[in-house]
Length: 340
Ligand code: TRP
Image 1 (cartoon, rainbow, N blue to C red):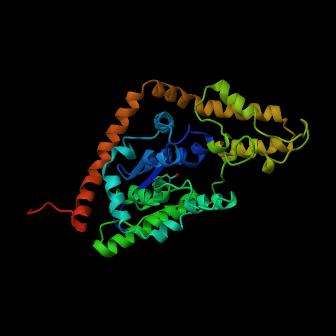
Image 2: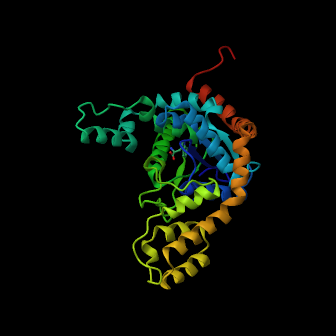
Image 3: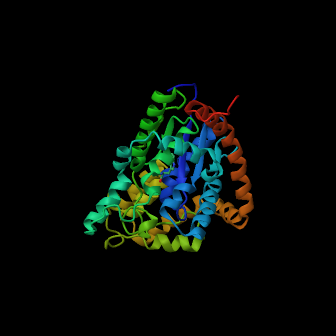
């Protein structure tokens, strides 16, 4: 690792409305980091160019950018300290993507999990052309992600386990660049919290928009209540001792409560807390936790130009890093002003 302080960077794909799983897995840790890290050493951005790979509905893409940005701001992201911006506001990123693409082996992209998953889906469906439905956007997704990271000399990239391979590809690509053109790029490392369990949704599968199985983060209280009431339980009656280690409600509670509160709730499971009572406890807890942010969220959704201004300010700060670095990169690869 070079330099004194680490540079942290992570992107949030703008698909869908932020949910409790996003909050626990990404938003809350980033908000905490944004408050403690030295100024200008952490970068958080809306990966809206990546979103285009997954969503071709323009209104949904635009709406999700607003919702995701508003959620991060409402959750308390310190944007004085951290740099918060939108990927598509940084024209240096797609330029770097192209330069990196010229160095990236096609074989490396063939090994990408997302691409292989698409191939497997076709194989299983008996489709002869395994590349059916695969766009160049999906195929080159890891190169764009490498540019996101390398553009800001990030060395710490907090991501979920599913993104480890992408960060490793970024390392590979950076090393190749440095080997060929000189040591301009910082080789990043994935920062994966192995202990953080994936939060399950109301029906017991991974909380994910693609399963329609989420607890939205800043929805109105009444809706939040409805989502919690829908969480799957078993048929045990009130008064029967219950197993907290096999309870979606307990998992959700634990993901937001303190260790002491969690221990106390464990006791109440042993004492036979009823499911209706537990649902109410969880709802009350989440509502108290989220109500202050919900108010800010609603205000931001109603005034998108405030969010826009915040992102524009972030983009300016981000570009004070990306512009000079891209200038160096362009010169290094031979894209130079003639006669200078
Ligand atoms: N691909 C990441 C995801 O879907 C989002 C992302 C895009 C990202 N660019 C990034 C994460 C750069 C970390 C660094 O979760």
